[in-house]
Length: 588
Image (cartoon, rainbow, N blue to C red; front, side, top):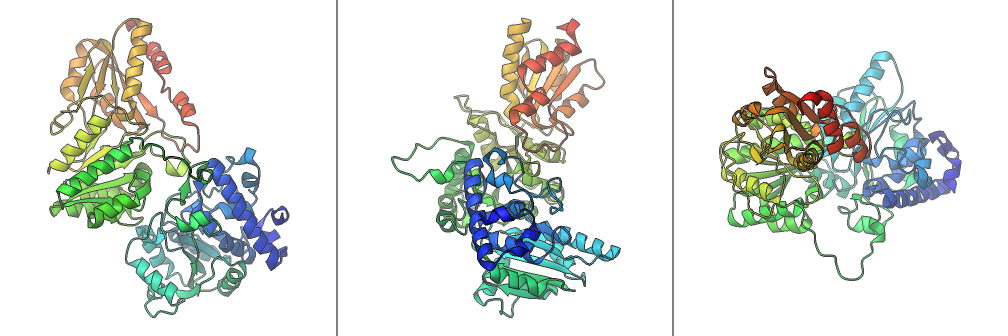
């Protein structure tokens, strides 16, 4: 293998053009094999192979600084910067994260997994270089839909006036995760169609020097393109046309499906009868939206460029037609857009992943809650998980539940979820967030008739004594298992409460516990600091009630197995009971 000769970027400079082409094929094969084994980002990495080889052939990393945007485009970069064993050796497939990580290599400046950041980060790197007298090149790689994010515009706006070396590489594969959304991409198409010669040019309008390269999947063309811009003394954009999924027919043909794949996806070539579809919270959501939209023309479903994550398939989007909006990778705009829709008589349903709602705090506070716009905000994948540190879903409860006027609901089963959706879509008083249950569908078998207009009224599901367990959302079921274990081991039945609301406390119910209970246990599937349980602790702060909060620590975990985290955080019935007995052995 040619890759045997390449351990660090400098080794590329010793290779011939033919060897570089062979290297590209080898890298592509490694990515396909590894990602199909472990799961991961496939299409973006296959499309950026030649561009990455050319970057490291022309520039001198780590002296020259390369900043990746949506670093799910960084697999080829990792292979070329001392981490190829993570792709060649199956035993080390999971050693390296799927994103850039400074602790792994001096060639990675930042730990980045969210989008639209590279222009801002690179502008800061370039400004620091200018202030300290450096001369190195600073390169920002952006693409795969990232230009639709607000921070990308802000970064470009400031990069354009640096008056020094900064090179913005726009990887234009005509895709985001799904199709690109927004007017900017019309200009990118015009520039592709005219080979960069169109008079109307977004980048030139900002003041960038502009170059276009039509052969982004050709190593030699990219080497020549980068030689043109290396050591520039002015802000420069190199606009590169690439093919997402390049080198794998299935990924080239169906770019959306192959953006990110699960392990074994490419081995499932079909044949035989299709498996029966399994009901999921995604299917419950899409069925609900389609039904509402068919009956009410003001209903509109919104996504910030992640439709597949919650089942917004191509067929679903087609059925909704103009009642569907993909705003691009622009969660901040999505919140403000939904707020204005609701204020103007429409019925918006906005779906966002927990990890990405973090970008919207000011819009949630100012554009939405200050204006009490009655949107339905669905938060998906909110849970303690074994995800990368860049994609954790454990911080949405502290973020959302402490904003005035917001009602944040945590259903525990299918029927509660549907009832909450119905209530949210029918009321006009509150912005409503719903933390979509994470995992397999749980059903109580009967419809839920709770009146959710009675804000902060908890549901008493088991009457007991001495210990009360308040299990929120996903962790209500952990609460029930804990209650069963307490009854079995300690000989009495504890009280169990489903709080339903994450944004407030049920003062009447909590006060009623004081007469016959010594301990209140709270369980939440997320970060404890600033979370739901602390509201309960604060309520009982001036009383004799002992409160134990169980949830996640305030930390960035990185691919730690979820069962290991449950042990670390004492999120098992046995460990919870141990903690209770340590606290008040004499009272139980």
